[in-house]
Length: 390
Ligand code: FES
Ligand SMILES: [Fe+2]
Picture 1 (cartoon, rainbow, N blue to C red):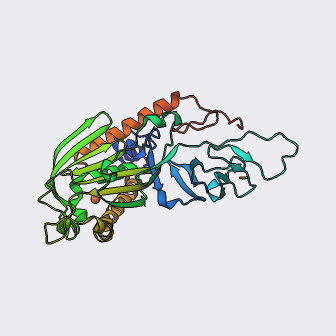
Picture 2 (picture 1 turned 90 degrees about the vertical axis):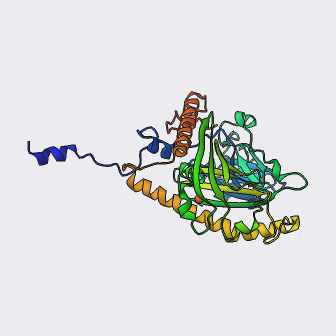
Picture 3 (picture 1 turned 90 degrees about the horizontal axis):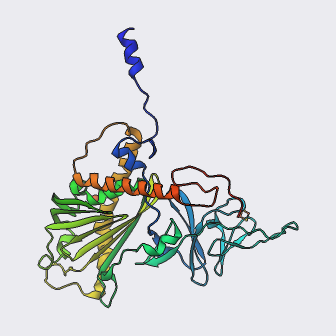
């Protein structure tokens, strides 16, 4: 055999799509295919996005969900699929606490039961039809859904943020984006401070040295010595006599991410994994140590909302858009070059990925063992025998 023929036989074609979770052999491929455990509460929208009498379509890991708020103010979350001919219910109409599909007028209550048929039933008994519903609630100005086993919803807490309640809540700044990127890329991004270069114009942090990283049960804790808030806008408002801005504590407290600078500047990041390459991310920043520039006087309470609006427009949102461009570009890079090795230097990133993979494996194990109505696909794609129509 010629050496050319030998070379030809050893060339393996590179698959044109990244491997699934079951196919993945490397940590990188596994984490980029992992879902997020649905047995947690996930922020899905701002409460203000869903007025009374309206619907809002969203997704959790590919599963379409319709949120609707009744004209009576009640909030509901159903699978976004009419049981009749599978139209999206989010195109329907809300009346009272019910949602009516736009096509043949089947009307659903908040638990997903069809309570009215707007047409003749051809002499048949009224069918007992239901679509799955999800626990839903509001907290911190956000709508939260529980996409997993409803029986577990009461056992899982939504993060408590005591600084935002009480008579003098901290100043708050919100920002939300839908990015074309896998959720794990966003978690890597928000806790990996090696990307100060990306933000060289705004300098939210620089010269970061990782001083601690530890995986403790379902949480990765890490700290950096770094300089926080050195941008042109933020550096004037942060009261450095009251807050130590030379280090930061972060955590990936599965499935949420948070930070704390000196006990006075904090944030949460809530990621909704919509599908393998789409994530909605909700950033919630809150501050306790802001001063009037050029003085030592704290920013008065009445001025805070105006200051937060200006900070959002001038500093925070432009900076987060840089992160958005980076993770979307990383997603495209992964899809094109998933078989090429990468060099990962930050050891904390390895811990986020380990945790994400383990939590998804644990969920898949629970999901395989869970009794379910037949015909419902398990999370790893197996489809059980046909649904009996109930
Ligand atoms: S498809 Fe919804 S009522 Fe027919
Ligand atoms: Fe960033």
